[in-house]
Amino acid sequence: MKIIEAYLRILLIFFALKSRGIQHYVKYFDTPSFSSSPDSHKETLKKVKKAVDLAVKFMIFNSDCVYYSLAFAMMLRRRNIPAVVCMGVSIFPFRAHAWVQVNGVVVSGDEKIVGGLYSFENACDYE
Image 1 (tube, helix red, strand yellow):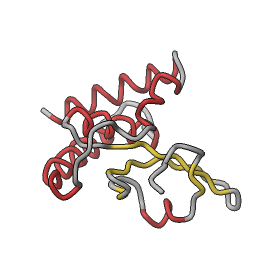
Image 2 (cartoon, one colour; image 1 turned 30 degrees about the vertical axis):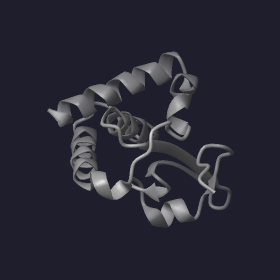
Image 3 (cartoon, helix red, strand yellow; image 1 turned 90 degrees about the horizontal axis):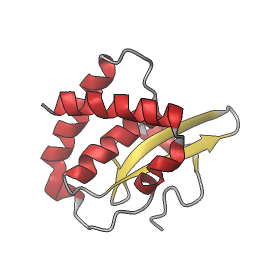
């Protein structure tokens, strides 16, 4: 059931970003109002991540890290896990990436990539 939810959320995000732009999803870049510890939700987090990973494999279009991260964060927040979408960029070589953090811990995206990026202002404010 989570795979279907993930698939539908990614499709929804794809069409919403194409028609309305990213401003509709800015709320997922802010720190959530509820608090939780990442350890208390490890199993739920793993299941949701697995569902989103599988849904991405069956997408009819190339679903990049932005779609993945927004869908993953939406599903985690629906389960009261305080997920935040972060975006970063490096200039040389140029690359950009989006990832999800829970209480400052990276839960999606490659840590090696994330470590070499400069986060966009206010996109990842845990310090």
